[in-house]
Image 1 (cartoon, rainbow, N blue to C red):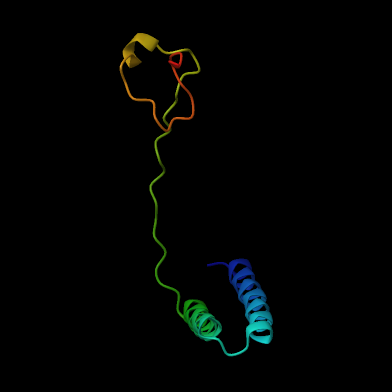
Image 2: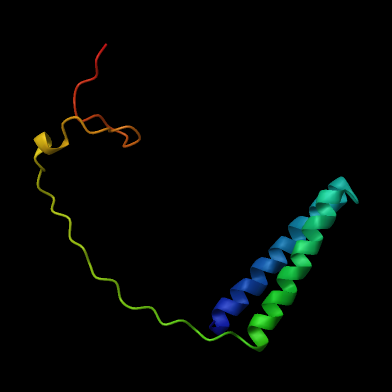
Length: 95
């Protein structure tokens, strides 16, 4: 992690701390608020550990680019295929 990423993490954790503080003032010592405070403390501990001794960075291989043509495909190839969930209908709806 770079210094700016760590600074951003610290800032975000600080914002979360303020939000949980507001929840505590609104809901008091409710179980959910205590769990959120516990989660926040764990985040602080993990952020400290990450800053003090970061794990080795992973090296990712560059992905091959797959080009998809803009031309219209042969609709006959899709006849009879299910189009549920695609957000459009390739053939007229029946009434």
